[in-house]
Image (tube, rainbow, N blue to C red):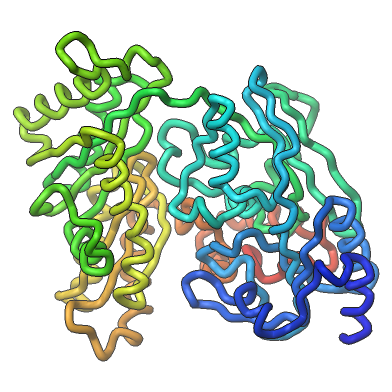
Amino acid sequence: MTELITQLQEIVGTKNIITDPADMAPYCDDWRGNYTGITPAVLLPTSTEMVADLLAFADKHNVTIVPQGGNTGLVGGGVPDKSGTMIILSLRRMNNIRSLSVDNRSMVVEAGCILQDIHTAAEENGLYFPLNLAAKGSCSIGGNLSTNAGGINVLRYGTTRDLCLGLEVVLLGGKVMNLLTPLRKDNTGYDLKQLFIGAEGTLGVITAASLKLSPLPKARATALAEIASPQDGVRLLSALKSATGDLVEAFEIMPHDIFAVVEKQFPQLPCPLQPIRPYAILLEIASSDETLAKADETGLIPLQQKLEDFLAKQLEDGLILDAVMAQNETQRKAMWDIREHAPDSTKAESHPVNTDVSVALSEIGTFYDLAIANVRKICPDVRICAYGHIGDGNIHFNVIEKLGGDADWATKRPQMFAAIYEALYAVNGSISAEHGIGQLKAEQLKGVKDPVALEMMHVIKQSFDPKNLLNPGRILS
């Protein structure tokens, strides 16, 4: 191993390799704390050519590689196992924005670019990259692409897959596949980039991406509305779409328990609507039309007035129980802070049961009812923190132990997972909506994926990585 490390150091240089265990520790732990691995070295290449040299070396010497972005993943896909033989290839230092075209509304960025930095660069040019995650200050675009990340704006703009025009990928053996097209249409055979989006580094290493940009929203209207049930939330979404067309930017559901947990862990973030009975929808509409952001002679801002009128009608019709609108950017940020602190709050409060499931909109109410009934059979006092992107059917049905703690929680957690997935299978949902498969769900995938589709996935893996050196054990166990 010492000789191997010396050879790797010759490829990347002494400044781009970490071998001290203390310095490597942050790269070996996943965000949730479910996985801790061991690696002999962390490599931090600074160019595509360097990545190509590393993958040529890995192929020649049978070195196992774990590609890693910002290490904010939630399924253990970017950390090594405990064998001590997996080398981490971190793309953090490949963080340049190579180009940005205002006319083409596109930009080319390296895989290590932090999502927030991409937002900033786009907005400085009057444009908008709509992928928006709670981890935007630390996650990288390479990781977002490798897991096909979703976030709060999928409802209007789609997943990361929909926002990617092209990729640059290094294959095992060192070949560089340049698919960095800025074109919206390129019908020249197989769309190979799609194979690498969502592949979690098991087929190749994404080193750069061509991204699709949108007009920068100039007007926003945001509100928090109480509803009686998740299915009422689906009805509210349908009504909002009919009333505003394609202006619905985000539509998030949060139950009473998550507000209580966020306020307990982050008391500086009080809920502007009290009490929550028993669910709330955080909704936002937005437009790039400047006229909708300018107050008229009476002082009314058209887009806000549009949302206010909509909420008044829904209150009158009984679809919502109460609502509060953000009157300025400070109030809007306060509402979104509650939603974005939901993952951190449950993590601080307990060792939560975390899920990332996808359900047809028509089945959301049924799923909630079944899942809640199932977990309460195991523990009647469990706290339901089932928040998420109800607008596209992506629910993070999370559960934490009862107030005061539960001495048997470690035993009950596996039962809770089984209970939630039982409800999911009853409505033909998916076990992963936006977090990926990683290590966490690799075994589970075998039981739910169509056998022929799973067979074809193995064929594709064998074609690109016959030695199983790229992130083995992730997605395909």
